[in-house]
Image (cartoon, rainbow, N blue to C red; front, side, top):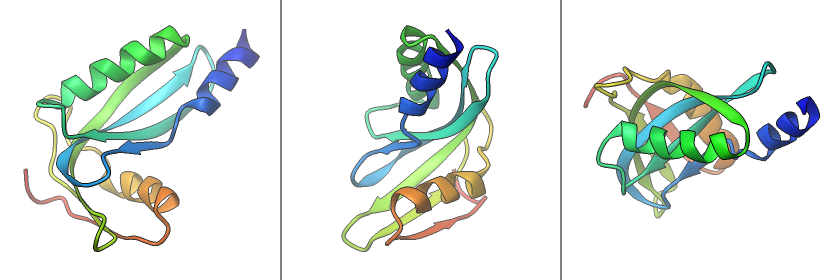
Length: 122
């Protein structure tokens, strides 16, 4: 079971965000039962609230036998034509995510982008 859980964890994408626009995001720690975890970024324009993003993710992960907790949220401004992403803001319900962690995750997925972050803004 541990090996299966670890494999399921490895299949969880580090970053899934919309291809452009301004939208809410959450930083989520995903865990295999009793095992190590990893932090992932999810950001989508369909989400009216940060909880919408987190709850959908929690449901999907539970089906794979994985648990999770929300480490905080914020907003992303994704401008693909300029190859820029700006990370800012916070979640009223979950608090402010560690935007520096989010930025590192985004840099790994978008190495040719300029990625910045700020603790200001809502």
